[in-house]
Image 1 (cartoon, rainbow, N blue to C red):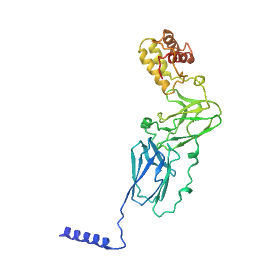
Image 2: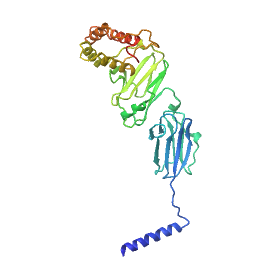
Image 3: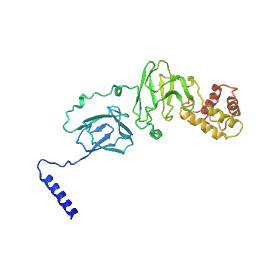
Image 4: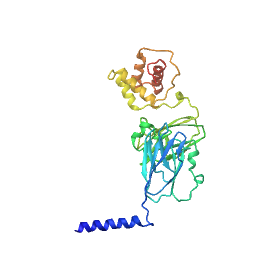
Length: 319
């Protein structure tokens, strides 16, 4: 009997509210913003509290989108065809946002009834600065390497006398940036490179990385440096490999594959010819001897690199 009365009361309340002209049940909407090769469509979206907004990436490349207020992520690295949705339940009135990948892609979502002029948005000045590197919001996860979005851009070319600014949107941000590479270790001359802002007054190639998240690796190239004239930095473990190869503890192919990896990942920087005219079918003994002597400290790093250069010029190492 008690349950029956509860049902009657409930139905009465529903009838009372539904028949009252002053009560309107909100109908939440599913709204979509398309990311195209030209920008956000629409670039301004009017919404109501409780609406679900979806950003869908219909461009031909991945996108990373953040808002200009607190840099909170709107979408992860959205590959072409992927989408991200969020229900806006808070008292949010307006949220301008932009793409880290295409910085002229800018948009805003606006609460219905809020007075707003898109042309009056004060966009961050770094959006119009070509010498900026961003850490993406999810770059604390090593999976950012898959789309090369740990640092955007990973490699930046500037002129002598220009400065570079780093803007960090990453959740779980790196607290220790250093010049150098994870393989060779920090370079004392480039301490803190990658943290805030740095002016470069000399030509050269300047790698840097995050000590906490070593997959965050970048390079600043200043001017038009000749890679062959850059300081040589070779990881210590390569000496071990060279010694093992010299004493036939690993195969020639294993050693060469390790060298190819280092060159392709800019850990060893050498001059790569546009074409190879001389084709060798085997590795000469003097290369193997030089590798062994280098591992034992009898010849210089440059002597070892000269051997690698010969292998490239003669088609044995292909990069």
